[in-house]
Amino acid sequence: MIMSPRTRKLLLTAHVTTSVGWCGALAVFLAHALVAVMSREEQIVRAMSIAMGLTAWLVIMPLSLATLVTGLTQALGTAWGLLRHYWVLFKLLLTAVATVVLLLKLGPISMLAEAAGKATFSSSDLVGLRTSLALHAAAGLVVLLAAVVLAIYKPAGLVRKGPLASGAILVLPLWVKFFGTVIAVLILLVGIMMFFGGHGPGAHAS
Image (cartoon, rainbow, N blue to C red; front, side, top):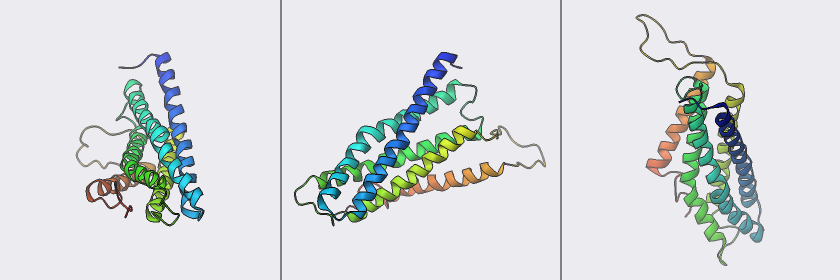
């Protein structure tokens, strides 16, 4: 069902606000993570590690879920559709991948924040975990910026429905092939995180 113009504008405002907020909050998280990795001052590392936990749970996680929900609702309630245009489909997939990775990393983030709150914590503890979180935050920011680019430029390309005619060859735009490959790789990596645990909850914590 197509939304009314007023509802569409209201939802678009909410989507843009949460999307931009997510990018900004993740940038702050990345700054905290980098300082926590590079600093040798125990109090600074402790403060940054605790701040990362608060930012992830109280800001980034709610914004990521709100972005995903408002984006999905917009796609279903406007003429763009969910499976009509490649840019809409890819943007939602990128958002979903970033959200899933965030949910997978909330456990390790909480573990770091909890450890940093103990009197026995030192700047040499959990260096691998802090480095991992910084790398994931940087990669997540790149993914979100790619979604922003798709939303702004809205590159042409319709998702084909139904079988090809006999002898016909499906020709995809170059940008569709590129983004499709990147997203396929990201989904594969998320699958590895979820099912093999190499970078999932509890990883790098020893």
